[in-house]
Image (cartoon, rainbow, N blue to C red; front, side, top):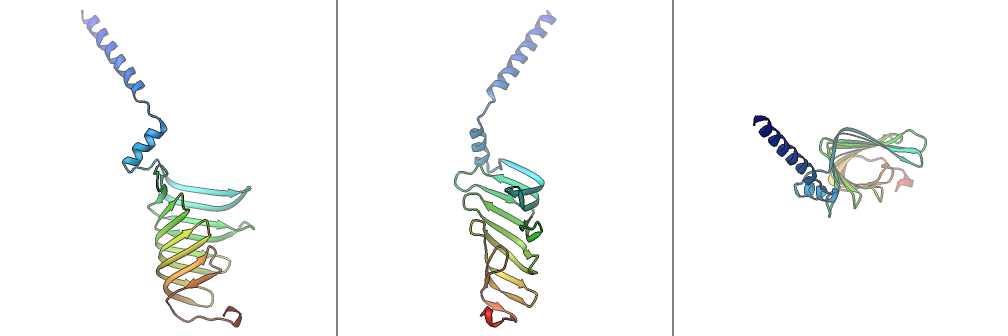
Length: 190
């Protein structure tokens, strides 16, 4: 009698287990919607190192300690780098062109606009220029940086402080607003 009862219990447990496995299938869309509703990322990674190539040539490298992918958002999909980011662009000769770093970053997938906050530093290695600010917006479609926050822009000739700065990605063409400091110019710069 005990063997028969044990066999019945094992059979019931096996049937429940099989039913549970077959009842837990969700489509990818259902899982993405569930994660979006709970404000959870669809993916995450630690210590990322991403190399971007265009036509077989390395154009940039991205490093970050933590990465969250919120591409499951319908209206505003984005990627988050909550513990900082470093982006190194590579010029056509294969050397580092510009380095961008900050303590926190958000990149919006649809608009290709990124916000970088906290100790933001952009360095053009060949021109020896450096921009420092606390908040920066980067329009990746237009290859354009801007901030309305306080900034320090350092060139080999001068240091410029102010509030509000706009520039192309390599800091070669720029416009500074509400500035203080001494600026050396030549007649052709004016």
